[in-house]
Length: 104
Image (cartoon, rainbow, N blue to C red):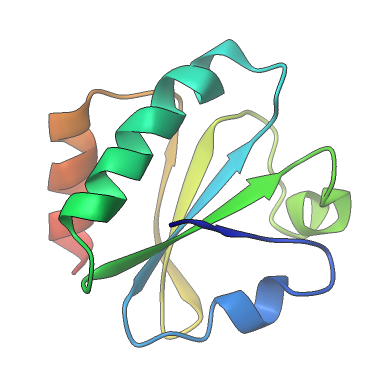
C-alpha cells in the first residue's frame, strides 16, 4: 500500500533499497484519478521491487515546490534517494510498467 507523504516525512520515505515511485497528485485532478488505480495495481504486482509514495500537492506544498512540480500527475523515480527518472501525465499500465522496469 502506498505511503502518504507530508512536508515533514518526505525525506525519510525516500530511504529505501527499492525503487521509490513518487506520485504527485491532487483530488481535483482528473488525470491523477485515472492514474491512481493503475499505480496501485502495479505496486501490488511488483511488491518487493518498488515502493509507492503519494504526495498530495495541496497538503505537501513544500515538497511539491522543492521538486518544482508544475503539472500533475507527475511521477518521480528515486533510487538511493536520487531522482533517476520522471514522467508527467497519465499513462496506460503497460507504459508505466515499462518505465519502472527500465529503472529497476
